[in-house]
Length: 263
Image (tube, rainbow, N blue to C red; front, side, top):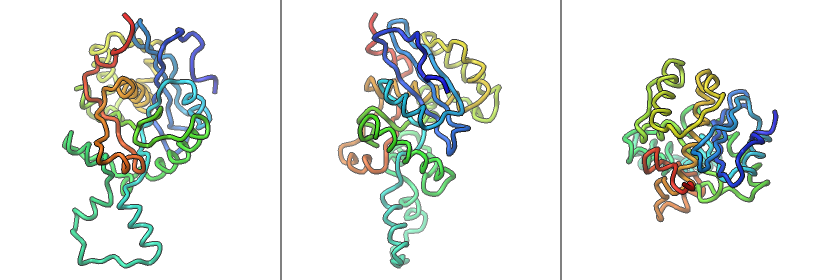
């Protein structure tokens, strides 16, 4: 595909990229937003993006957000490793659903549940495994180009969750991932709340597929993370987050994304 970043990006602007990752390139989307004194402009949007294009973008932008779990729960990894070595499962310690849920969810998933009252999909037990495997390889490839990726989001690349961002910003429209009319209502709400966001010629693509829309939302969330408008990783969970990953949840309104832009 052609270079992901448009050639007319204004100098001294800030670029954030959002990736809606899928198990295969066909449904993987990449959005790049240019942040400058003019506001924000969606300068590039593509669906059907391969890893090489994502790695190239990671090198060129200021920050990238990827919609996928960056790792697996520590307890799940230990359980599977022990099972592979034929270690017995001590049923006397089986706490039922509480035990299974501890294996299924990462600490960041529990944090999302505490803040929002909803569980994200489990990377260990839901239909995310193939995409997470893809993500693990992609993070390594990005690391080869820009240096090791900190899965806690402390570096240039962060884990994002567009659906949660929409809830926090008060913009979620049910069924937007499967219904074009819902996507249209979501975009209307987004542009009304953020009149400074220029979507350029990409509106039809945003309406056509939820992959494109989630990539845009990932790029917006990445901006929130870049300007310090996401909840920090609690100190006691930093080491765990570096292994499991940590979801960057916006801590402020959509308008906070303009923080730091020159007048």
